[in-house]
Length: 296
Image (cartoon, rainbow, N blue to C red; front, side, top):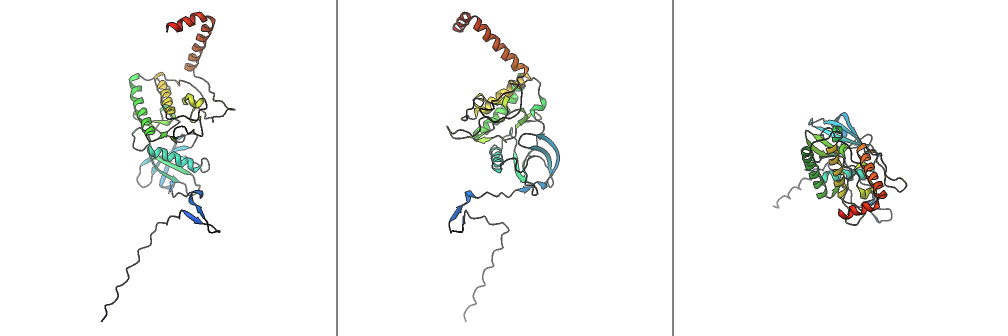
């Protein structure tokens, strides 16, 4: 007598995860359309998972809100990026640049990217730190304290540049202070480092008093040194209690028809007047000036 045939194996349970779309999609003519030409879709968690408490900051690219996770109770900072205010690719670059610098104690950590299912607004979820360094200025600090603060900021810049990221908008407003521990935040102007010789699309990025000379000159081939220039400006501001180059914090695009200008502070005005008076004295006595130059 023949043995009964074995029972068929049970079918695997249906997966609840939606299958990924194929890379190429057939068209009516039978050809395929590359996936790169189709807009990407991202499945983001909902901002409703967070209880929004209070607005703690506002910048050119968005509003920062203090919030609390409803399940864990952890306090976070939500950077609200209204739908349509920025291209989603720009938001993706900001999140990627900040995520590339994860793990450094002097850089604000990004935790997640969420969205409002009703409006489509995007939110960056970051660790909550506190007030910015701008809230504590103007106040001159002793050199020993400034050395301690600059070691932290230079360490953060070293991590960013080692991760091939240029911040491009380091300023007191984008440095948070948590009981003496400084943290660089707001990567809205950040970008990944271009290969040598490849220019950046924008030359004037960030805030004018902390912008490097090469950017002010309209040079699109700059590098991580623009962050170090900004840190030098901040160091001078910490030591003197006043901005080195003063003035207007408005952003401007680099355009020949709109040259960068700002009003100077009292410190920089006095420096400029001293230089002007020296030039006038030099022009009035050229022989003395030339002999002084030779002796120097």
